[in-house]
Length: 300
Image (cartoon, rainbow, N blue to C red; front, top):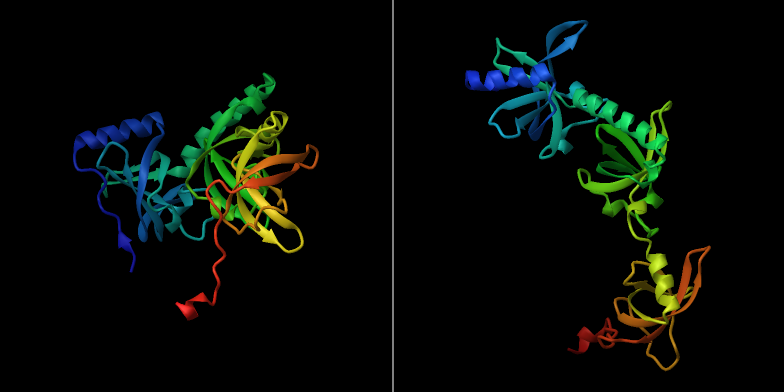
């Protein structure tokens, strides 16, 4: 059986504060403290009717006021459940104050609409000034689709997307790096106002480790790395301190490395167009790991 909503405010001062926030359409922050199925009022055909539906319970920032957001006011996106947002911080507006039941309803969706309209105006201005691609924005990760390999990021209420290759300069599997709710810095790569599409890049806010590698190559420097793979066909792979995984060459006088070995290297070659590089392993500065015999326990 669905629960009913508990009262939101306890005195007239809180009620007056809520009324002012609603009147000014002020965007405020709130923490989602719970998600459950409850009976709440929903606007249908210009009238509020009571329905049983999923509701997010909020604690409004800087107060002890409890507010509620029905699932249809949480987002334009139809989430299977809001449970994943428990514990998150959301921006809301006060949408309805029910004096009779002592309940305040808030809307994440309408707060997003206000912020999105302001953000779109900002993008138009930056594009006209030819400074859009150099501006860094804070965005919140909303999710990742492994089938399309797209990361979804929300900036000031606007839903943006990012191709997986623009997550970082590395081209590995990024799925384990995606944390919903994490704040990241991005740049806008493409802005299509007519189709409401905004493509962003996290990678473009970071220094390109390949450029750093080229600088070290020109200086004839040694670099540190860690052996990440020993492939019987393709050979040794080393992840350098700069963040790139490159092909490693082992001179005959050095022992065979094992995965996890820390190695010192000199840069042997760099292909700028294909973004490939090769290094020559020169030593094991922390010492050489021993290959453990899997059957050694028999004789211990």
